[in-house]
Each structure stands twice: as structure tokens, then as C-alpha cells.
Image 1 (cartoon, protein in one colour):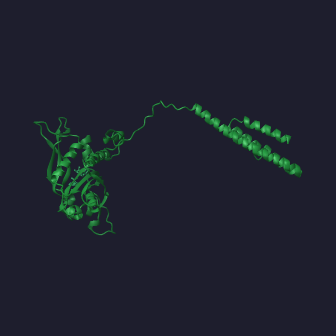
Image 2 (spheres, protein in one colour):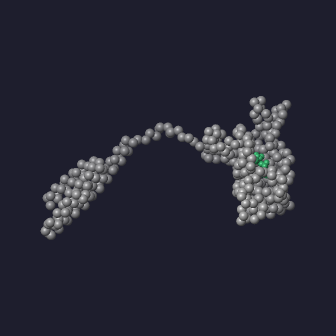
Image 3 (cartoon, protein in one colour):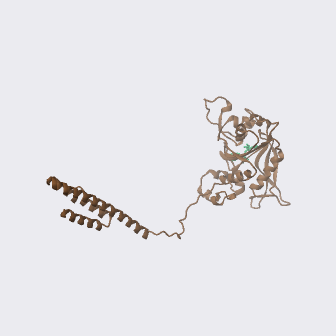
Amino acid sequence: MTDINALKTEITSEIEAARTPAALDDVRVTVLGKKGRITALMKTLGGMDPEERKTVGAALNVLKDEIAELIKSQEKALKKQALDERLATETLDVTLSTRPERSGKIHPISQTMEELVGIFGAMGFQVAEGPDIEDDWHNFTALNFPPGHPAREMQDTFFLPEDLSEEGERAKKLLRTHTSAVQIRHMQEHEPPYKIVCFGRTYRSDYDMTHTPMFHQMEGLYIDKNVTMAHLKGCLTDFVRSYFKLDDLPVRFRPSFFPFVEPGAEVDIGYIKKPDGGIKLGKAPDGEEQKWMEILGAGMVHPNVLKNCGVDPDEYQGFAFGMGIERLTMLKYGIPDLRTFFECDTRWLAHYGFDPLDRPNNAMR
Ligand code: FA5
């Protein structure tokens, strides 16, 4: 027993002297390990007479538990001490300025769409959506493009490989050539009146400085019991003046043909040529030539289109309009080449893109 008490005192002071987790682990191995001191004593129990074995065995078990407990609490104390030391030395200087970070920019197309939602939203239009992969009926036939009519060639179409499980011209799949197909889907799925705008990608086989095979359009549709051409003119005049932020921007409605409207119009805005060859939107001063550029297509929805969607043209009528979003963006922000929108050049985006924290209408704040 005296030996056991002496051993306990010895081991306890070894544990207290271990100042690192590694040193403590060494003590644990020399005491409780396979060849440890307590383990060795346990092995001597076999040679003792039963009475002695009983008392020494019990005492050794108590010692083993006490030592294990002591090691555990020393381990805890060492961990706490290490943490205290780290907290005391690792100070955080909150006055230091942050490291420079590359911030992202909003693509000009997204910016324009945001602005358009703002303007048409304020006029009471809601946003509708439709698929990029359309069928011939929604993209052409329902919009009063007669089958085989040359009007279909106005828009160079990407047709998808024939789907043999579907039959007939009506189901022929294509990449939508304009967002006008969304009007059709919306009218089929909802009851009038309609007051919607829709945004999305459109596709045509076309490529030069002002045309790309994929581009974005915006479409508008307003159908109710008493919508007239006067509403069309008022709505679109307000829109272009608001979008370009020019109260006196000249706006001209010029007759034009689209199969899905009657009468149809193209909307032009006024500009002047600057001496350096550039252009400036706005009214020409006295004595200077007023120039015009086309900005969007519009018209009163053709009665055949309404009938195709189950809407009675004797009860409901209204107008539709459509425009290229890249074109609007290029004009407002002076971007000369449409192809650059899709080249994914981050230098271009850094130059023409928009700071997310400085959006119109404080949308992100
Ligand atoms: C249409 O697509 C009609 N759906 C618009 C419309 C809607 C008229 C409702 C009347 C009523 P258009 O083919 O003109 O119209 O195209 C509209 C605009 O899309 C063009 O003015 C142009 O800005 C843009 N656009 C057309 N093709 C391309 C292209 N390949 N790349 C970029 N923009 C294009």
C-alpha cells in the first residue's frame, strides 16, 4: 500500500509537470500503456495469495482510475491555457482597410431589362414568360403568318431536327425568332384583359455588327375592351422618352407590315449627326436636319390572332409591340458593336457593365 501511495504521489507530480500535450501523452504511456508502471503492477497480482490479491487489486484499480482522471483534467487545463495564450497574442486590427477585391458588374442587357421592368411596371404591365424552344404554330401560324407565306422568311429561322413522334407542321420545333410567341401562350392560358411585357432570348440566322444569331427582345401586349391606337401612341411615346430620359425626344410612327398587327407601325426616334460623325438623340435645332432611326415595331393586334387564341375580336382589341434589347442598350450607352455583348470579355464588362450597388430605382439597396 505504501508503494501504491508513493507511486501515486510520483505520477501525480509527473502529470502536473507535463506542460505540453505531447509531454502529457508520454506520461500516460509510461503509466497506463501496455508496458506502463500500473500495468506492470497489475501483472504481479497473479503471483499473490488471494487475500493480498484482493486488496492490492482493488487499490490498483482505484489508482488507475484516479490517474486517468488526473490526466484528463490536466489535458483540459493545457487546452484552456493554449487557447488563452492564442487569444492574448492573436489580436485583430479592425481599423485596417480591407484587401482590394474584384467586384462583379451587371451586364448591360440585364441592366436594360431592369430599367424596362421599372418603366412598364409603373404603367401597370405584368411580366410573362415563354419557352425559347417553340413550335411552328405559336411562333408563326397563330400570329397570322400563313403556311408557306414569304412573311415567314422575314425571320431566318433555326428549325430543330424533325421530331418523328410529333406530326405535322404545327408541332415543328424551332428556336423562337421573336418574343411575340409569348403573347399567344399568354392569351391561350388566361382570360382577357391582358397587360403584359415579356423578355427573353430570341434566335435568327444572322451575323454582323448589328445582328447576332442570339439576341434579346422585349414584347408588350395590352388588350381590353376599349384600347385604341391612341393608347399605343401614348404608351410608346412615354416609354421611349422615359427610357432615354429625354422629355422632348421626337417620336414618329411610320406605317409598316407585320402579319400579326393591323395597322402596323415602326416607331422611330429623332437624332442629329454630330460634327465628329457620332449621333445625339433628340430634337434637331432650327436649321439642322432631323434624322430618324427605327427603335421598335408595333401595331393593333390583328383580329385573326385574337381569334386563334379564343378571344373575341368584336369585344376585345388592343396593341402589341416588340423591340431588340441590345439595340436599345447600344443606343443609350453608346456601345458600337452588338457582337461584343456575347464575347464574355471581362474587360468589356468592366467598362460597360453597371455597379450592382448603383442601380436605377435603388433596387439593390
Ligand atoms: C419582330 O420581331 C416583331 N415580333 C416585333 C413586333 C411585336 C412588331 C409586336 C409588332 C408587334 P423585327 O423582326 O423587326 O420584329 O425585330 C424586332 C427587333 O429585334 C429589331 O428592331 C432589332 O432591334 C431586333 N433584332 C432583329 N434581329 C436581330 C438580330 N439578329 N440581332 C439583334 N437584334 C435583332
